[in-house]
Image 1: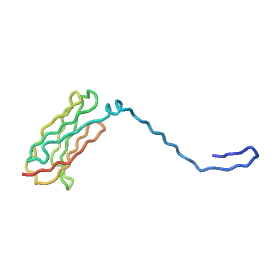
Image 2 (image 1 turned 90 degrees about the horizontal axis):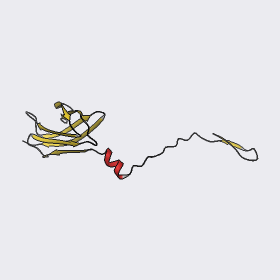
Image 3 (image 1 turned 45 degrees about the vertical axis):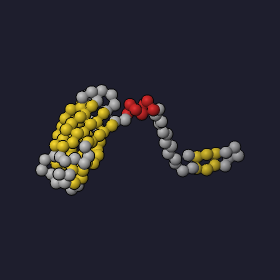
Image 4 (image 1 turned 90 degrees about the vertical axis):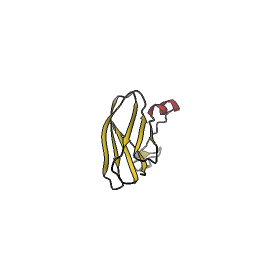
Length: 118
């Protein structure tokens, strides 16, 4: 940007990018927040996933359980009805250890860890 003062002196400034933030009030924030629960944790092989989405969404969700090597041990698609996903997961023939539970709903990903102890 070029700047000229009243006596003809001038200078050129560097390009500056300006960012603005959008603050949400508490009510708007509550509409955007989803909640995910895994229980019991640790598990002996059977656990429940609960996700509450804002609004009354009816859509599909992909649930994956991934071991520490990145191998997918469980991969299923299920329904989200009226903004609620509640699914019982049974891990069979997997080793004790930590697992990543990943849920993909539309363009959102939710994840948490679960400990499996036989």
